[in-house]
Image (cartoon, rainbow, N blue to C red; front, side, top):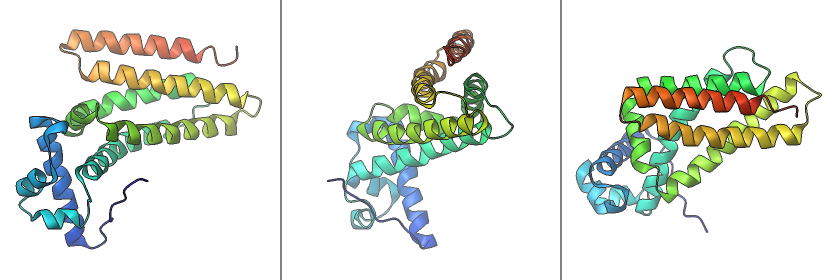
Amino acid sequence: MAITRRVPKQKRSIEKVERILDVTAKLMKEIGADNITTHLVAKSAGIAVGSLYQFFPNIETVKVALVERVMNQLYLTIMQSLQSTPAHELGELSERLIDATLKFYCHQQDVVQTILAIRNTEAFEQVKGAKNEKVISGIVSYINSHNQHINLEQLTRKTRVAIMLSDVMTFLVWTAVTEKERLAYIQEWKLLSNGYAMTINR
């Protein structure tokens, strides 16, 4: 059974939770996700460990909350971009997804670095999977509303594959050592995405 956490409602409690998550992100970058504990997070945040336990029953729930926060920022950026102007084909939406991810990389470096620090955790996989399903559902619904003749099962399958490709290419781009390497990955990403989207009616 999943362990739940108490969601703060008062301003002071919200600020305390945000401080806990900020400290957790910093510690993950410095010493790795596997090395942090509730006691270490509480000490670094300048609060009693009992105060941390009021909101987080264990360190895994802290990690999940942090992942939810950073992934929400990324996916909100992506969905806003996808919905900005009409685009009725998977290829067009895939291109927008790429551009939104690249824009996020340029303007949200702190968040990007946090995502990179936690990407190998169980919490990250858990949250990413749920967020991906929401994005897939949103894209499929949007395209289907503008193209009633499309094969919905095929569209869903191809959208899921496109999102999985996006996950892989995102981290290749974000972790590229040089700008030349990053640009090469971006070009490959767009070629793969466009080529795959063209098979949507086959």
